Length: 83
Image (tube, rainbow, N blue to C red; front, side, top):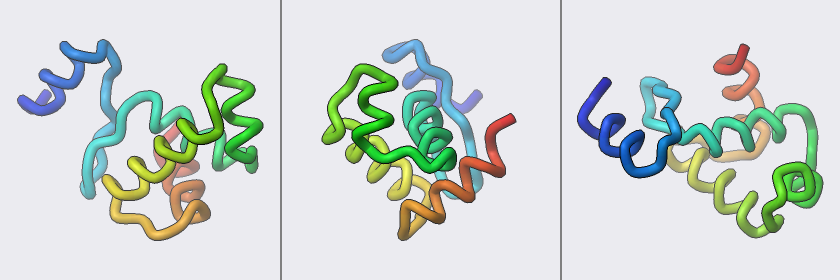
């Protein structure tokens, strides 16, 4: 575990998924998985009990960390990185 992962884990108690392009929090990975299922921000928010705006932030942060330009690219990435 890298220093950044250890600090993040200690502060948030959420493990990180590591990819060659960056680090994604467990929540961002979960949201990305739901994006891959074809859910809208509103549907994801309802499922997780958070606002659609918060979902959009998670999507944006995950895309930025991974160097992806679209929601579709995030969905493909999630499909490849989740069991």
